[in-house]
Length: 595
Image (cartoon, rainbow, N blue to C red; front, side, top):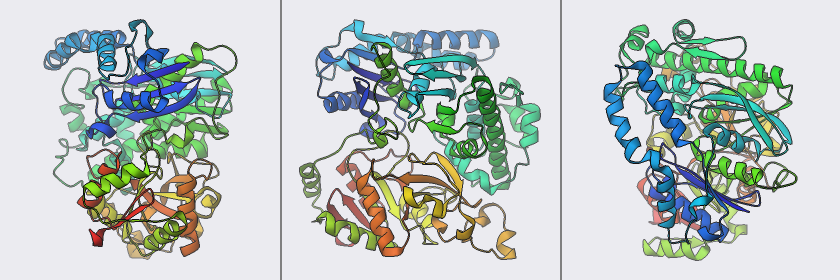
């Protein structure tokens, strides 16, 4: 059975394809269109998935869409009616798009797929899933568990924004749901702090350790009621997203002492304190949900998805403090991953017998390396078309050469194999550096990524070495858990350094691996496994042989406001547009000084 899953029309469009329950391919549309968070129909991603599976639309058994458009439209209308006459401007902006396009999504899907020139789709093959069930399916079916509790937390679905339930074998049931949204609470602060909603939430998370939770009690008193059973209620008097064109209103601004930060102005200490405050409140709310879910279900395992599940600081607390023995988080936890979820849900619902298989002992995600790869010939042709100067190396020469370059504080663009699915680069579309370099964090931010200097970078570490550097007793292959750096790697700070506040903390060298140690001595860890990425594992092993450290800085291969690179052409252009020192495309090596 072949199932093609789609998510589209809101943000982060994607496609995924499953054959007999095994994930074959998945990719986000933005990687092909080069339009970050592309919400349009995922034509390129769908074409890629069909080609990767070697099938036409005639051979596909079902096409699944991750959402019920009519239910979403029903929620939209009821929301506007309940707030009327407020929200007229927003209503006038939103409704024509729905009437002309979004209600007719089945037609858009059929037209979009048939336009790919890859066969003809039978309209009866198109099925629609529920938004949160698609999220839940993406979390449970690829997980390593035969039974688990499921928690989905995002911005907004059809009606639910938080839901939970249980799964065993093929059966997955969501038993409870809430209409109010932790995702929208966090996004409201993202907007108020001057960042872009659905894109800047991770900036709020990264800025939080520079502040103090001075406003946390104010948030709890006025904005959110977190109840003993894990449920919560937002005070909508302070928010504008139901009826307006902004996330927050004047009452929100008055509560927190001023207007929204102008994105052109640098954040100050008040903004850092606000970020820390909402992060702390979010973590408390998530932990309350997790504890209630464990008490209610009695399950040992927890699976998570939805955009809030990308908050790796909260995830780290769940791993350390939560009552579940094991947690597994869908690496493409946002709406993109729901394309995979709806495909897996249909595959399991329409098949007989046992739960459909996984491909390795870890999980069914293949390390989330599910996107396009490029042949040796394709890479060479691209480089020659640009007149690039390059050398092709054997593996035996390549790995020690790049390890030596990294050990000399060169910044390396590393392009290998299949592209990652989801928001993280995990060693196939990565920019790498030496975490022992005190200057590496700011160099990467200012000269390579062209982004805010306060943003932290993540370590990629050999799984067998993780406990040497981090207080982490579980695998973290998808960079979704934050952990403390071990005390023996931390340095004694001077009284002057300990007294620093705000962004003055940034230049303090805190550990033996300062480039990946955030100002609160934490790091967002990726454990690298030979089973899922033998080439990246080999590079780390070579770097360890050179330096004694099996850990590297790993950040996504892109610059600010652009998607992660997909093709050799994307990688070459990014390399040439930045101050990156070395580019590795498969076994082809380019040195900037020679270009």
